[in-house]
Image (cartoon, rainbow, N blue to C red; front, side, top):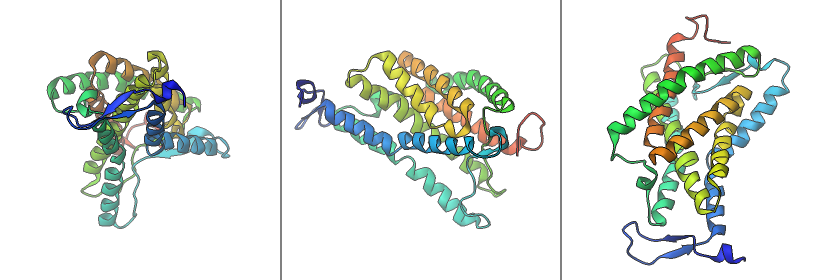
Length: 273
């Protein structure tokens, strides 16, 4: 073991600074970070790559294939479908709970990455402005890439027309947002900084990771989300909080999921299959 790996990087203990403390090495932090990613968005990135290869090798053009999100888990059985939807949403947040535990172990917490209720109105205001700026540009970019054949046709929802459809879509949007912003921005940037990565290296890693798990949508999904990742990292470094990013991401996904449910098949400019 090298001196760097054996050296103290983080002291783990109670959040109030009392009690016994344990030194955490670079090696432990690397393993921890890889495990968190393997249980969450890193695994999603590998899955998206495999799905993208499958789309590339299919006989149809990319824009003639669908990337479906929020589909029925039990067609024709609405109550079972609802139970499964809520189960999938809640279990997808387990890695966030793990991150909260790991941050608490080191003597910090979610408050240190700005995921708390201390500044609800500034977070809401900033997040709304970010969503407004990114939303229109993102939609235009998707339409261009889909028309050019570099993207699959994204179908953000295909749930049955039941009473819980829109509440589930909103919960799904919130779950995506919390999972991605807490892990890909707050947690990952913190850990990479503790591991000695440069700010630029950490920005690239976070942004590429964000793009990777959207690769199932096509090249456009990868590039668009990677650019969004760069913007979100820069905003996080400016504000020191993931709260506004969670708000922005939630609003963007609600707009995509609910907007598609309301407009698909009713307007000419929205691609459908």
